[in-house]
Amino acid sequence: MSDLKEFIREIPDFPKKGINFKDITPLLANPKAFAFAVDGLVNGYICENINYVVCIEARGFVIGTALAYRLGAGVIMVRKPGKLPYECSSSSYDLEYGSATLEIHKDALKKGDRVIIADDVLATGGTALATINLITEFGAEVVDTVFLAELSFLKGREKLKPYGINSLLKFDY
Image (cartoon, rainbow, N blue to C red; front, side):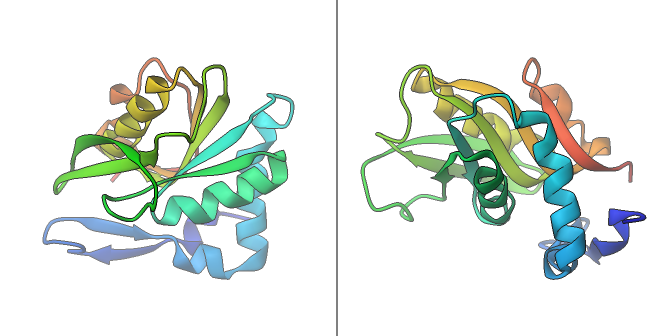
């Protein structure tokens, strides 16, 4: 594959004015591009004994389940409030365009579990940091955070220190 960025569509003023949304659906729709992206993300974790891939709603589910399949790991979903059927722990955070809360089942992880967090885009880092907070409450180890794309101009990477960040594509604008 030449440049996976050609499969990312930009939508100006979505979900609100001033946001330049990076739409990954064209990449997901292209079997070769999607396979290339998954292979590029999973390679660093094949020998890491990952127990779970924690996937962030909603596009993170697509990326994370593909990674989990390739790693032979389980999938844990982190969702918006009221979407998971069992007792949940929650964490609130700020977005580049508001605030939100995420939830995870209270029995999702246990001490010593090794996990990677998967999402489509790293923007300000708030969503990933809230997910890290949920995971560490269990005593599980966050091995890395994995993103298809990173909006480096929003400096989300800085918010996630000292956790590792693996992003396949970087956008500087």
